[in-house]
Image 1 (cartoon, rainbow, N blue to C red):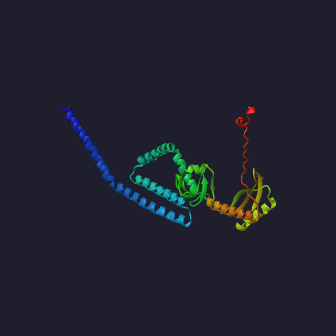
Image 2: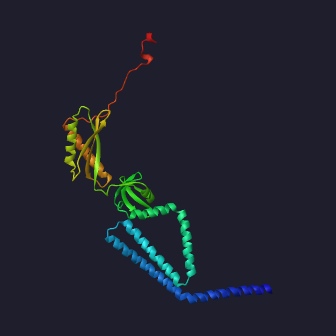
Image 3: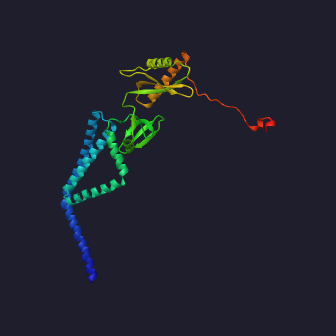
Length: 296
């Protein structure tokens, strides 16, 4: 009998609890509906705010990576504000406090577990806002060279001359030097060569400078520079330096190709020799099998 009474009492307690929950839901239903409506409104506001920021940055000519990151951050901030406002309408102050405390602990745990990822993320934000690296630039970094195609929160993607893509983590770019060809429209090209020891060195110097100066126009304080660098095994070596338009590595190769053809033609017309390495082979054979029998 006591057991039956206890069961009925437990069932009655459950029904009373559910009845209390139902009453609470009915009483808070307007606030719940209002919270949902407010959150939806903030979602719509976040959408239009991100579009507005994107248009403003587009008018200012900001690069794609900056616009993408800025619009995403603005959208997340507006949605987060809407979420906390909705919780406030539900009179869930304790829940709100618990959510903030839990978010702090969770953020700390995630930060410790994803140190490398977060480092790349912050590096991506930095890369997106510096003028020294933008989408479309031709760069050399970490042993790779190519055109910057995208700058994301985790990595940058460059397209090399062989039409292959390379993904480099943002932290590698921040921590390592990189060379940007596009930031400077003019660059100095250096070409090494050598002439025979019998050459008239002053004539070679003047002829080379005149040849290069006739092809590549030097501007302002720019000039064609010619210096002998040393005595080689079979030639007297020199370097000629000149300025030309360079925005990517291919421009340097094209300039060198043009300069080499022109210098070779000028040297041929003036009987100036560009020697190739000479090897001397000694055929002396002192093996005993070649000696007379009396010397054995």
